[in-house]
Length: 272
Image (cartoon, rainbow, N blue to C red; front, top):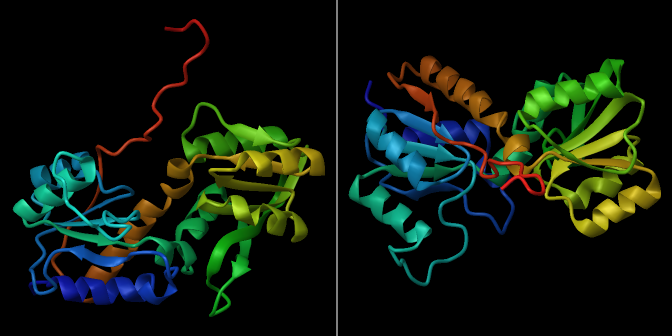
């Protein structure tokens, strides 16, 4: 059975309903024709030229990214800019681009659930519930049994695949309840503390928020935007593969092999 793009979009709407996206977001089909036939799918976090080149090399004519390639309304498409060059290449090679952004953040089994499961947390519930109640921003869960600070940090570095990490406040010696939000989640810090979390893990933590954590005696960890969202990509691959198998779609779904953390080096003073 040949699969058209609108079939995939209907399936994605079951996995991460587009109605769950924030009002300011831009999700769904951003480049392409709904009636186009899909050859194969490539998944990544970011709509980059590198990802486009990988899709072309693999013969994939459909890309699904977490972050949208068109976020704000476009007044111009200047093809010497990265965004303009991306759109030019996607259109010239007839590559369809789909974004699953805050709909995937807010859905059950989305970005924060994937991060929590990768860490081994259980008894998960939304940190800021949505409607329906199992959806919403962030997650809070527990380690059973609780972990020592050393065991937790070992698990965290392994999950995030980072060599260094930023912490505000004091890391607890014993960690049972963890709140988290994959991606940018500085605004949920006080909610995490008020709901009884031993610490909060997210990314793009504001300076003022870090100061608040320091003076409140609450531990906040910035795990970087890329690393706290990356666990959802293979998870989304598995969901799409299940969708394809259920519907007898002959689709290959690839994970990007070229996408990397944008911050690639940890320089020390006098290291250059």
